[in-house]
Image (cartoon, rainbow, N blue to C red; front, side, top):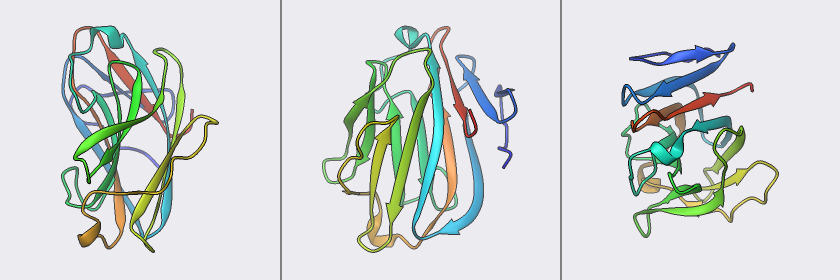
Length: 164
C-alpha cells in the first residue's frame, strides 16, 4: 500500500504523491493480478491554467498489465480545460465524461470486467458511464499495475492519493 516514488515526486500526508512542473515522471505500483476489479484514487490539481495544452490531458491514471505502455489498459486523463476523459480505443481519443475543479479533491473510480473486456468510470457521486471497450482488449488477461503521470507545465502540479 505504498507507492514507489521517482524523480521529483514527494509525498503529501501518508499516501499521496505530488508531481510538480519540474519533471514529467511516471510512477507505477504493481499489485495482485485481477481479471475483474476496481481502482479508486483521489486527484487534486493545482494551477491548471498554467498547464501546457495536451489533447490527451496532463494528469493521467492507468490500470494496466506490467508497465505504463502495456498493450491492454484502461486510462483516465484530467485535462487543462476541466474535463475528465477515458481512453476510447474505437475512436482513438480521450472521450470526456465529467468535469472537475482545480484545488478540489476529486474521487475517481474505475471498474473493469473480463466477461466482455470493458470498463466504466465515475467521478465523485456522479453516475457511472456505460461499459466501454478498453485498449488492447484482444490481448487482455488481467491487470496488475496502477500508474500515475503528469506532463509538466509552468507552476502547476497534481496530487494523487489513495486514502484522502
